[in-house]
Length: 102
Image 1 (cartoon, rainbow, N blue to C red):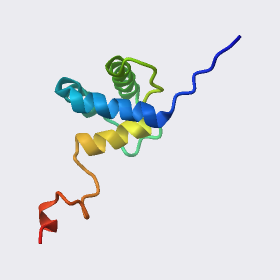
Image 2: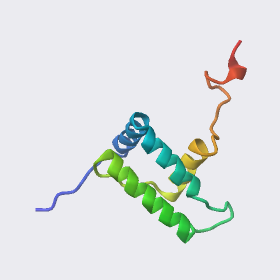
Image 3: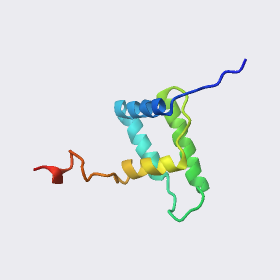
Image 4: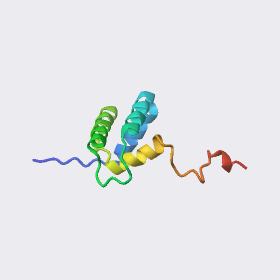
């Protein structure tokens, strides 16, 4: 009898969020690894060193959440990097942005 793992990707993401929020050390390491993930916008493929960093990041995430984790894709790592490292996210309507205070 063969069993298949049907893990909800949203549950995996929630587990990552919770681990990063509860453990400052995890967040710091997450941010450090994301900073090491460097891919040129002109690159057609993920460079070998970037793939190695992504593999290490996914391994650490699996350890943090203590369970099954599919792993972040190259595109997902770039999105996380833009938000966490480069602090680029849509803040036009953010209730926390100072320019929105009336």
